[in-house]
Amino acid sequence: MTTDASAAPSLRTWTATTVADDVRAGRLTALDATREALRRIETRDGSLGAFQVVRRDAAVREAAALDTAGTAGLPLAGVPVAIKDNIPVEGEPMRVGSAATEGYPQTASHEVVRRIREAGGVVVGLTRVPELCVFGATDSVYGVTRNPWDPERTPGGSSGGSAAAVASGQVPVAHGNDGMGSVRIPAACTGIVGIKPGGGVVPCDLGETDWYGLSENGALGTTVADTALLLSVLAGDPSLAVLGDVPTLRIAVSTRPPVQGVKVDREHVRALFATAAALMRDGHDVERHDPTYPNSAAVAGLARWFAGTWADAEKLDPALLEPRVRSHAALGKQVVERGMLAEEPRDAWKQKAGELLSTYDVLMTPVLAQPPLEAKRWSETNWATTMAANVRYAPFSAPWNVASFPAMSVPAGVHPTAGTPMSVQLVAAPGKEHLLLDLAARIETLRPWQRTAPGYL
Image (cartoon, rainbow, N blue to C red; front, top):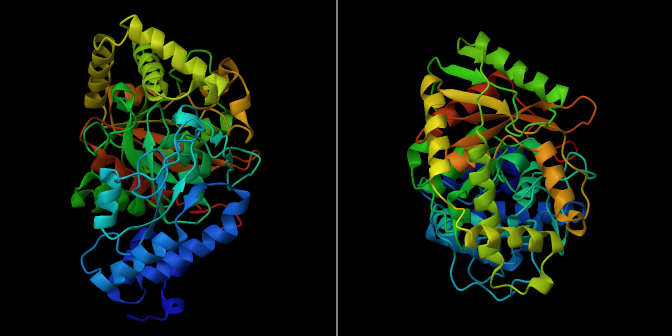
């Protein structure tokens, strides 16, 4: 099949939905779309460092084979997709941001990679992460990944490479995963949409333990429709891609950080209230309500974060790990040996969170408390410095990993002095991913955002 790629509108809009529409309609081939993504990666990623591996030849072969087989009915027909470098892609190394991992080609792909390809997506590369995906800024022995909005700032972590690739228009959508906010934080840092589904919606199988139930695979895109489309493929649930009208909702709005002593930047508060005001004018019942975050929930989250890191690091050469990651893993070893992974504190928080989200349909908070951190070699700082920086700038996401509730990040403007994006977090009860997506789509209509960073249109 031959097409006039220059006539395809999707190469201008560069969304997953328009690329797939054009490929299915014959206005574009999967090979055209793949070559466009590879061209963008070649010209844009040198200053950003979003990609760990670019699958130039392999992606071209996959796209050509897809065109030969036919793309009718495929939801991601020909869409270039980036995969976070902590799940296996057959034939490619999986480094997880670490010199301690082995660089041999993986023998089989993760289930979510299989689903993406079965839906017609083309894997063009693997994106960078901090070592073992532990922290909220993306740098490692392989380099510093930078924010397309401001290269002096981080795109967040641990799905920072995926977020930077999407926000710079290199790919329309990307896979990420989220153990303490690792989809929502990068989405907020780079002004895109990111969703962490609730437990059991998308196959997980991350590392040795899924961080003892904290982690979920999720989706990143520049529009709600694109993010919903990718999530629907990851979840094997086509209905998630069908966005609908939003009923009148009762929405709780909170600026209270889950960590005592954290100061929330005034502009991030204003962005939250501006979004709340737009929803109120749209007819929703919006009121201020600050949840109480029990200390037991924080303890349950930290214990699993530490212990999950220990499980992931246990078989690796400690001499090749960053000192801060060794410290994190050592705490995890203590957690495991002292039997501190009890389910009761987590269950108590799930019950309390469930009561809140039965009274309200949605909780809305900031995602970040401060603009994104400096882009630098945080890997060369000590554990305490990294932890303090992470908590100060991104405290809002972790409780919803502990509860295993669905949550997402939706853009909410640009900081007037920092010049970086701001976002709101939407949280709902288990099974309410569709409600979050529908509400996010309504916010997108009421308060549209610039889909890619300045200079990457």
